[in-house]
Image (cartoon, rainbow, N blue to C red):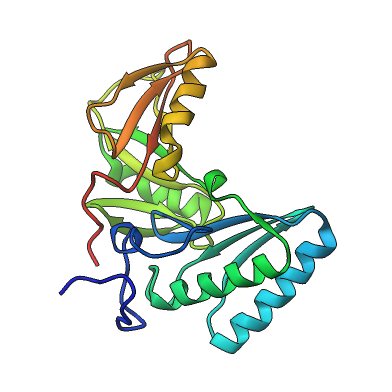
Amino acid sequence: MGYKPGTPPHPRRKLTERDLAGEDLPDWRMLIDRLHASYDTGDFVTAVRLVDAITLAAEEMDHHPDLDLSYGRLDVRLISHDVGAVTPRDVALARRISELALAAGATPHPERTCVLELGLDSADEAEIRPFWAALLHYDTFEAWGEIQIRDTTGRRPTIWFQPTGAHDVPRQRWHLDLRIPPEVVEGRIAAAIEAGGELVDDTAAPAFWVLADPQGNRACLTTWQGRESPAA
């Protein structure tokens, strides 16, 4: 039986973007494997006080977020580290954090949440994956049928490997994948085109759009829509 928004599933159940699409979480966006929120607090002291309030709530719930604090801004990421995915525990904590942010007068900015991925072209990803995992001290995991390497804190970009034919260097081998909320895609594409880029391919939309800069270097905007969820 699938997850139904508003119902209390098992607290360790892994939730997908599709599962959360019907939840009332206006401050939050699920990007790949975590819930993300970003708040403007106006000043540093307010941000610190909000962190203090979140800390108390997290201790009470025995579930803890990842926080990035800077002047006048607080970014929050939620994942259930024991299962490596978003669960109902994260949903509950997200709602509580939204309440605390509202009480603190913080302004949510879900439109600026994003997750950067790096795609590396390779004719033999198994040959090079161990090197990059060791160099960056990343963990290896599988999602959407792909073997990827990632920083478990969520602070640094995930790296995945795109199959390609064998070729000599130079040839573009890296490209950026930027996961963003679905509702901001059209505006981001328009801004990139206005800045001199072009839309190269939208046949896989809404899973991803391929864009290029004026010199032909490519990047992809990606969303959770239009793709199968990763295996639980």
